[in-house]
Amino acid sequence: MPERMIRRVRVGYIPLTDCAPVVMAAIRGYDRRHGIEIELARAPSWAAIRDGLLTGELDAAHALYGLIYGLQMGIGGPRQDMAVLMTLNRNGQAITLSRRLLERGITEGRALAELIRSDPRRYTFAQTFPTGTHALWLYYWLASHGVHPFRDINNITVPPPQMVANLAAGNVDGYCVGEPWNALAIARGAGFTVATSQAVWPDHPEKVLACADRFASGQPDVARSLVMALLEACRDLDTPAGRTDAARILAGPGYVNVPMEIIAGRLQGDYEDGRDGRWHDPDPMRFHADGQVNFPWLSDGMWFLTQFRRWGLLPEHPDYQAVARRVNRTGLYREAATALGIALPEGDMRHSVLMDGRAWDGSEPAAYADGFAIAA
Image 1 (tube, rainbow, N blue to C red):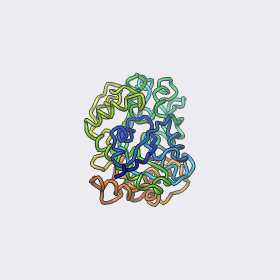
Image 2: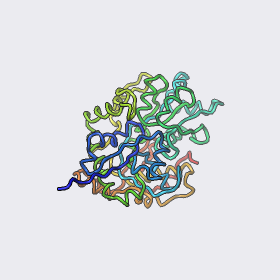
Image 3: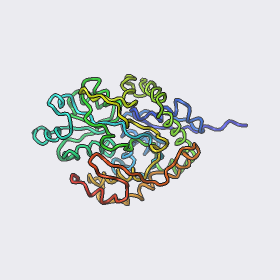
Image 4: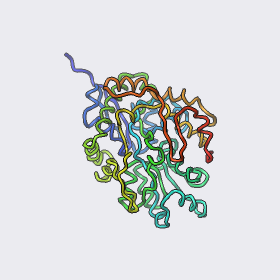
């Protein structure tokens, strides 16, 4: 019998702890098990991931959920039909403030808001991409404390690996980013964690496996095989041994390139905030949770659209569910998960409650988007 032909798939990623599924799928051979070979492509910024997906240089990528929805709607880059194949992880990001703010007695959001209102100096905060998850967690957190993220502060974009250096140099007063760039700021004495992203939205969606529609629709068998490979990697990453192994590999110079212990702590749920607080978070970064993490819930995608509308990035309400059904490939995901015996939900929506007590289930997206006191 002739050997089955292996299809090479170029997958982009940013050096972050939550790139683990794509890296481990390639390192552990889950890709070849499903007839593909993942060619890993490390990118310096989310803009580079965007460009690679748009030009076809990348077949797929570890991507910010909101980046993909932004491209679908023509914001944050040229409009192009996109596809979310699966969710890679939930939770595990954070908002970091500078050591200088801590020395002024700022330890939580309410005190920060009072300082911003009273101080004539304009404070600067960074996110990693204008329509990305980190931007929207930062905006939501600030607004929940009465700070308008566009009118009351300077709002800039900085690639994840450059965050700590910018904080230490005084170029920014705080930022929202993925790990390990929050833990590293603490280790270097540059900042402290004021909030985790799971405190903003418990079990929030974070990175996704994404591609242009031309790849998902033109090569559905390859896309399905890629989902299956990453599902196996995600399942292994939700075991203690899998996380330890991932921290060791990601620490290498070819991947995230920071000491293993900086990655491993928060990956295992062990947090310190940089001001003598230590705890074990019961809801750290999750990669699988019996498939609950990985299903591309329509309500998750719709939430990002509500925030685009809230902040004036969309001039009018879209057909929220229609957009989500076009982008999130629930059918392809169900096929991949079924082949691996992974449990599937009956529906395509889920229920969440965010830090301000507002419930979200996708049922009334326009009313939800219009219901915020602080908005564009």
